[in-house]
Image 1 (cartoon, rainbow, N blue to C red):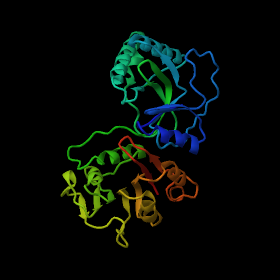
Image 2: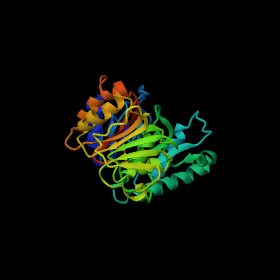
Image 3: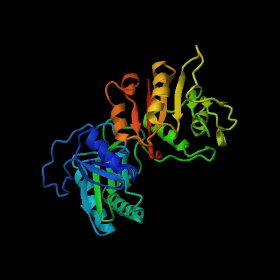
Image 4: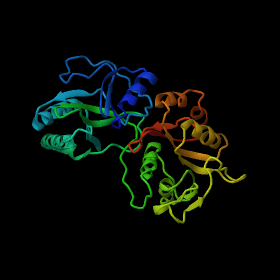
Length: 349
């Protein structure tokens, strides 16, 4: 399988695959890792083995292409022709009746590669229209939202470089995606919580309650408030931008680690926490009591990696007797598109 990730984090993805899931690494480069025995030959001469139909819940992978085939070409037309041959050949006995994803991507760090991808995609699209006009009209140039428990079928094209392309008909979607900014959002961190909603498959609703620990300058609070949720923002620092004086946000200048919901008060629908603190400290003093005492139904918690070994931390979080396994089974741990040296927990009690 070919797994894409944020550039610079392929070594951590490779370690996650090998150390936590026992998968061999065939190759890695900026923005992607190839796991398993290798690529299926484009000629189809070798027999395809029985492949697993399940995938571990991965943190650092953004998209996992199932059984990618390698095609090569020195020109736009050569690549478009070979991708067309692969796609049409794979359509035998398959009838496409609804929208399907046609996703073309590659490492953004390779200068000029984006133009190459666009040119090959356009040339391939013209060829497809001439032969299968109805199928071409149903193509959607984006991934489905959310996280897939099973692979999504479509066409997934990844450019390793200008002349080497890996193509697959199926891929697992892990939920990460680039989010649109908001001019009123007071900080870049706003994008992280917006993306976290996609991974969780749910977002705050009008009338729901949110406790945002370490809220300042208010990006996460603003994100919930603009959806109509009522927010209690806990931070000694000031709120800014759209969060400042927002009618749905109550700002309390308190220490996030010392805040305790009032006795007898209703549980919060959401706990938000994005603190620049050692992750075990956040887990022990915030996540653990909030889950154990039933103070929230759902949560979005960001853990800063700092000097912590991310793979060792993942191993701790995923053990059968861990806090998350016992109090919040089904929690998803993701290195988001908008995360840096951190990863995000999304789940519910």
